[in-house]
Amino acid sequence: MTSPAADDTELGREQGGAFMPRFDAQGLLTAIAVDVVTNAILMVAYMDGEALAKTRASGLAHFHSRSRGKLWLKGETSGHFLRVEEIRVDCDQDALLLLVRPEGPACHTGATSCFYRTLTGDSLVRNDI
Image (spheres, rainbow, N blue to C red):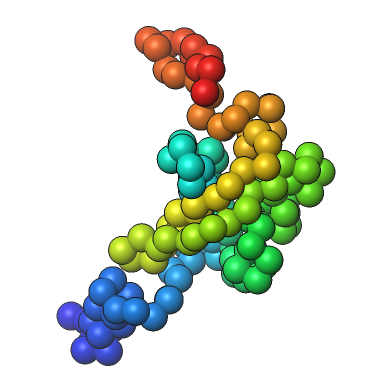
């Protein structure tokens, strides 16, 4: 049985107005970047507390690189920044939707979106999105 305080916290997290991000065991939130104009999903990445704070302060998308184990500013080497216009939070506050204005391709491959292939049978077929 959960305590009343735990129930109040969950109710507040799911229905209240306070931002109470629920980071996973690695200290990360899933962040989905969506083009604010086209509604295309551009990329999925992860944010830790530092990335979230830098994103909110600067208006530029920052993420936590799991492979490098450090903070990275999207576009720091390519110049293809993601300007964040709005951050939406899911119901249990463990995922974020970033509505962004991309300044160039979002994918490191040069594709507009990281979702540039469709699974057809056992093959990947490139989309021109």
